[in-house]
Length: 175
View (cartoon, one colour):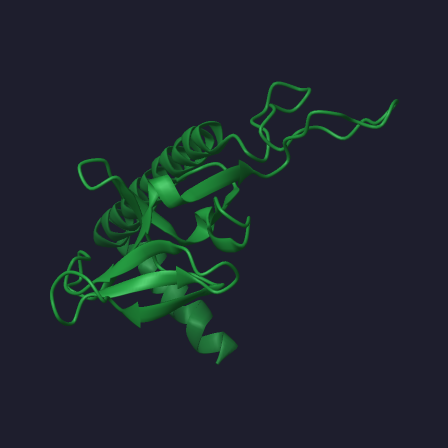
């Protein structure tokens, strides 16, 4: 997953999509694939094949992408944005900060060495480690549960006949 960012029209800076909607890039086509756009209209192409649909920026009318029927993994129409027609901005970055500001860039690591909010690789690694540890704990619990059941079964099978008789008498007295 990308760092948190927005994608906008290079011509007029109209926001078109963001990294939460990002799927993949197609370097050979010089496009990125997203699951949704805003500020753009789908229009039948005047050039190319009949049925081709292009994405036009609603603000400046520049062509910013195209719809590609059947191009997604699920066979649905993919939304492609032309890399040459868009720009991007990573959220939380800036060139100038207010003096004395303690605000930390989202992409910077936390002061205690833990991954920062924008450190998706660090967060992914930490999540993977926690999932691994959780699976280990679950496995240990299952092993202990199975062992306890075996011990109880073994104890019941080998219990003293006299003790069994006393237990039965105690049960009868209580009921």
